[in-house]
Length: 163
Image (cartoon, rainbow, N blue to C red):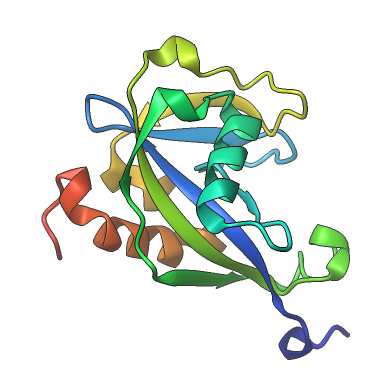
């Protein structure tokens, strides 16, 4: 039995990518058979600045380069989620209990042709634009609370009524 409390959280950067119509990018993971979508995110390397990690993850997962986006918001708040019991010890070689994430909101200043998920190490098998209010409904259940909190944090730049 793995002691969840003995494991640290994996440092991570996440990206809310907004298009000109106020929709957000979501991708369907290659390694999942679930009908689950997520926004670009990934680990922060030791010594790496979280914003630099966000730009890197955006490029690695979507092919979108830094010059094709503008930074809209970068709150200091860190969000955490725990892996469910059935994934604990299996994901990330069993080193982490979940993730501690810093999120950044970018606006895509280029067109959809700037997005190419067929990257060097693809993470997504499909992508689409989604109304931000629908994010909690399409994400895996263990990340729903985190995505709901993101909607609160980014309510103003997303044009949502703060609840």
